[in-house]
Length: 307
View (cartoon, rainbow, N blue to C red):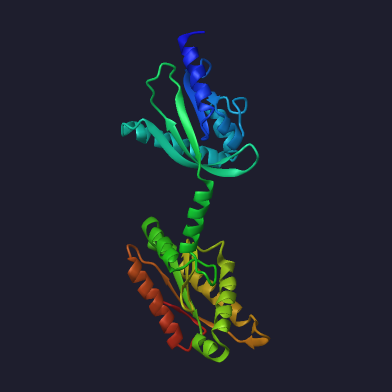
């Protein structure tokens, strides 16, 4: 046995005791394709225990991507994303590349891992070390907190923070003529609260939210803006189409029977709608759609006004 083989055996045995999944790979020239291929040489016990695959399953990097990312679109995105991260690390003179990835484990479960790969090596065997730290529970907690921070607790719709973020992004990526806003609120909502109580008012807002969710496939965002006001962001719609959507919502709401503790409530809503202008600021667009809604309220409520 050569000195190199002896050192590799010692290394493999040592890594088998580490509780973090570890994979060792080596670059080789593929004589058939003429390209450098990353061959996998070793996976430790923790890798097999936590991720489930052996070298038979993932003999090289191509097999790895094909196995843990079965969806071809996701796979392509991850391959390209990893290549960019590696290139960025090399350009910055960093010896490792790191990314978070949601992978398919052998048992059929998708889990989040933080993958750190050694991209340059000075050891004799030219083996590159890849570690995979399980961050699944942490990532789920982060995702849950992110969802809560962007969601209205009562209705389950997006909240104002989320709506502003969506609108800011839309303003920076689309022409004004392709972006329209609808702002609406429940008519005489204070009277509902005063007459039937705030629990009734909450129930009304939830039922209105379920009605507005009918636009989920069309709208970039449906949000509870505040109180009894809702904001809908529509991309790819003309002002006339937006008006027709608002009018249909108005009619649907007016014809829907709402009940609270066996009491029927006759609800209506007022709508303001605008088409965002080229290079218009977020504040300007929100001011105009709010003014259109105010005009609808002043015009007698239960109507749609274009701003």
